[in-house]
Image (tube, rainbow over all chains, first blue to last red):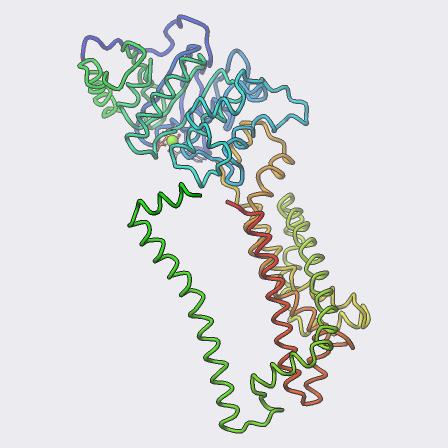
Length: 269
Length: 268
Ligand SMILES: Nc1ncnc2c1ncn2[C@@H]1O[C@H](COP(=O)(O)OP(=O)(O)OP(=O)(O)O)[C@@H](O)[C@H]1O
Ligand SMILES: [Mg+2]
């Protein structure tokens, strides 16, 4: 193990700042199948977490649990001190899926506006972001493509629209499930940098699932390694690389060491 | 405009590609047109060569002559059929869409009524037409009902499929946004069903004409269906053929209208 790697063997180590999300001994079952067992972790507010783990270990399930798409079988999940349902109703978090999940009949701008249209009539109080949908599209580098329909955009552009949509209600927690998994290397690098910029500008807490170890190291302040059968937390690895991160950092020895460490860890999960 | 032209001029490869594409498009139109023209010519030659009596099979020129000569009569009978087809189309499809919505909202309603819809669909329209004329009388209503009935089933099936064809991920997105059932319906299910709806409407555009004509066969003194029966009994083959031509013209008109609306609405 490289000496630079500081690991937290037990995830319930004392958090240093305010907590964005907290899992306490949370389990998820699909019928008799246990997808996640006894997961406990405090997600620090404002931090960028990346989540790694073998396929089928429960990474998506964990995000879906946090986002109130599936219930806990036992244990407890809270987001900013509220239940996941309350947090969902207050739009405290947003989700970015692997495929952009844009509505194909809506223009890029209209897709970004969707969250603002839903719930308004029923008087749900929506957090109004300090950026308009137009400004958000500009933020993700899509100025001038506001009126394009999703099928007229590339995969990377569609994903950027999805990110803009996720940001429109100014969430405090952003859940991303392999958002760049289907993109080519170049586009992915580009979007990684953009995402880091957005993270720094907005101060949003991010949980980011990926299959790519370099991506996990490059983006994350902390890498959560999950283990399969049943899904549980193996280790949280702090990534102590200087920020802002740059593409060149990937060739540094530290970066390579982190990657190598995580690769070995992943093999044992 | 000039910028685009300059760009084209600057890229000879693109120019060649454009030219090829244009040729392809021309061919796509020319081939079926040429084939149709040749077949009509063959028909004309055949009828004249074997001296086929006009009442058995008129030559295309006879039909064309009748089409022009009897155009006022044809047109007078065209309007009622158009009217019945369009009304039947509207009524049948609205009913189908509403029932599809009910099906998607409630499994119980679907379980209760879908088998009945399937059963009604299995009865040949020719068998049910006389019954409907008996019920509704020889007026407009029976024809509209028959046209509506024939439109109904394909639209129902397609619309149910369309409303259910929402990706699970889009529904998860809706849930994360805490969307209500009606918001999911108006903002996601209904728009995503439109391509399905339009493929059903294109079927209905032509079948509603069939329905109206079948209705007129059973009992009517106006309309293309009535004219077909009349021409047949009088061995007036050129008029019969001209009427058939008008009927198919009506179908094409309805189909084209739906296609144009589809282009305007379904832009994705
Ligand atoms: N709706 C469901 N019903 C039953 N089992 C499920 C369901 N969703 C997930 N599972 C199971 O739970 C386990 C974890 O699934 P999950 O999708 O969270 O894995 P993952 O870590 O995201 O995998 P991948 O990296 O391939 O995306 C898998 O074994 C999967 O088969
Ligand atoms: Mg997954």
